[in-house]
Image 1 (cartoon, one colour):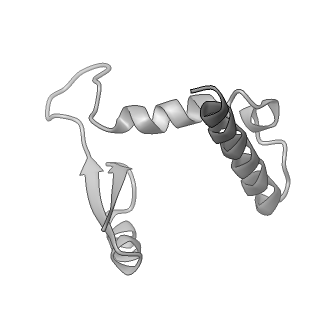
Image 2 (cartoon, rainbow, N blue to C red):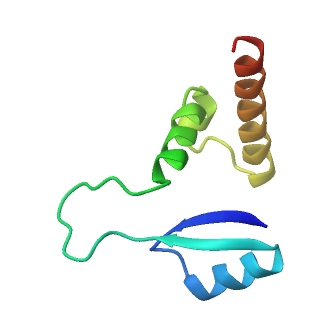
Length: 90
């Protein structure tokens, strides 16, 4: 079983169907009732950290690509380079 964390804004039914099909355990991360302003949410930092790593690559800062497959390839290259850098310099 794999864990999948999602924001409360996603289409819950569609996401649950897809997660069940791919054998994921889905956990929706929501804000507390009555919370105002910024609030640190559990597991949200993982996503924000990953976006921070990706924006170090100039081509991923904006949507320069016209095709989704090229954009996906650039994300994979950026994340692969990040993993190689972290493994080479622990």
